[in-house]
Picture (cartoon, rainbow, N blue to C red):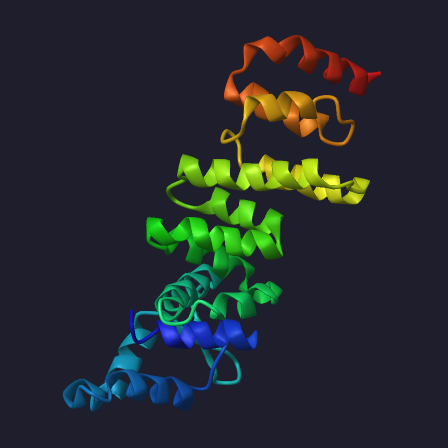
Length: 223
C-alpha cells in the first residue's frame, strides 16, 4: 500500500484520474530507493498490479485506480501520514472540493486523540463539512459530537444570523444525531428555520416530553 498512497495523493491533489506509467515507476523508485532489491523489481511490481486489475489503463495508455473510492482511501492514508509532519497541509486541502471525500476518510483514519482538534480546525473553516466528516467516521465519539454541537450552539446564540446561515447550520446539526443537548434543541423548536431539524433530532434522542410539540409542528407543515 505504501507504493500506491503517494500516487493516489498526487492524483487527488492534481484533480486527475490517471497518471503516465513512467510517473508511476518514478514514484515506486522514490519509495523503494533505500531497498535496492525491491527497487530493481519495480517494473515487475507494476505489471503485477496491472494483472490484478488494481491499476487499469485508459484509452490513452495512462493508468488509474480501478475504483474512485480506492483512490480516495489511499489518498486519505497518505494525508494522515503527511499530517503527522505538517498539520498545515489540511488547510490547503479544505479549499478544494476534489479533496472532500478523501478528507472525510482522512478524519475517520486519524488516531482518536487527534480527531477532536482536527474536526475543530475543519469546523472553523466549514462547520457543515466538519459535521459530515464526523458522521462518516467509523467510530463516532460522543465527546466530539457534543463538541461540534456546542460550536453550532455558540454560533446560534452569539450573533444574528440570516435565514441562509441558519439553514446551513440546520444541515450541519442533522449530521450529529444523536449527539446533542436537549435544552438547546427544545429552544430551537421555537425557531421557524431550525424547528424541523430540532424536532427530528429530539425524536431520535428519544425525548418523549417534546412529542406534543413535534406533532404540532408536523400538523403546521401539513396545513
